[in-house]
Length: 535
Image 1 (cartoon, rainbow, N blue to C red):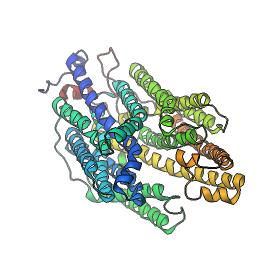
Image 2 (image 1 turned 45 degrees about the vertical axis):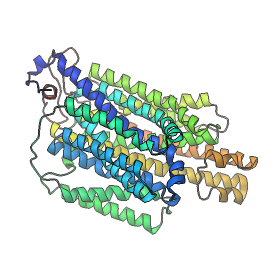
Image 3 (image 1 turned 180 degrees about the horizontal axis):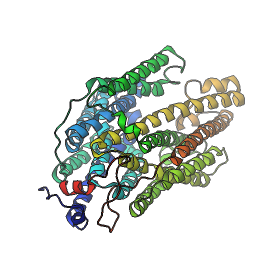
Image 4 (image 1 turned 30 degrees about the vertical axis):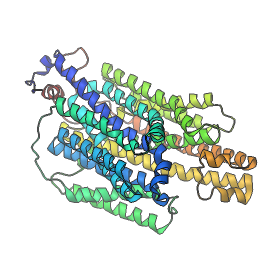
């Protein structure tokens, strides 16, 4: 599709073809997000079958850890590559690497191969979400971006709801390898659609990749993700391994900050944190990730252990939260597009998130599914106000040349928040379960959950009635503590939200022909012109 001649923004507003082409590109980008979000959701139900076929139970956790580590470590690098060499090329490369990793994972013959191939898959996944958000950031002016980001949140919610069901169905009827092969047709569709329709301005790199900074950042991120993954499970929190990882991670990040101040083209330019809004959105993104993924972990556990739901049904019972998140996110996006106002949403979202978590903390062994569903809907509504608004404001706070690193940084902080949330809330949950089991069932109860406080449905069914009752109360106590901690994180997000400065969003308001606004502290840029170049 030939590039359209650049137009003056006033002419651009009345041009229909760019808008149609942007919608086609956005559809392809939604397929890519589906790839990124579906993968772990689909693979999780297949894990028991994978172990039965390949063996290596002792290495099972690394199937997830390798993917998570590679995704987190590569996220900022993909963002910088897009800024330097062009977002389209970086995005297509990430899709190709993800598909190669998916195909190889499906062909794995032992657990070691699967872990290695999952790491390759994770390297590609690190560029999928960043690429999607960066491309939308370049194609669509911030004033109009909210409605598209609301659609992205909807796709994420669909993936979270449908992923476990699809994974279980594929594993039962076609075999576990199809949990990876299913990525191939979806990825090919996204690859060809983006290749055919998306035309972004070419870039001539002005500097070299900061390899030392990239290496230090990778070591720092990897160390802290391993701390959150291994702490309290593989190793005690005060063990030498965890302490060494914390020391290594801290030293690497200090070195990274020093290097970023010296190099001409830093991987993560520290200047973007001079923007108050960008820094605040990074904090809010971290805290919302902390809460969201902690809730995603403990709600199904509560539903299975206390409310008697099956593993499949516990996923479906999360629908009130996910549907609330999807609906509110889409409404927030459209309101932001129509009004250009956004500060209200982080504030309301933080309040709803905190209220929802406080309500969930009140659940006990007598709480009905209807009641817990209402509580989850409140939490979902809060997260829906925050999910994409944080990305939108972060992107609006930087210049176009930094769109990739802004998108990758926002994604990275949310990813790190989720890792810390699962680890810290998990440690608190385990301690409370252990304490309650010992109190209610004596030493035998404490020994029963000493290795793992999270029992599957099969193990729970085998328990004597007295022990099962003690465990249900213990899980209720553990989730109470975890959700109370989450509510404190929501208070932190609320404090940060109050300090957000409502800088006008760049781009023309719907129906207007005159672009408005500018970056936080920067002059306005021709975002409308980019749309004309892109189709």
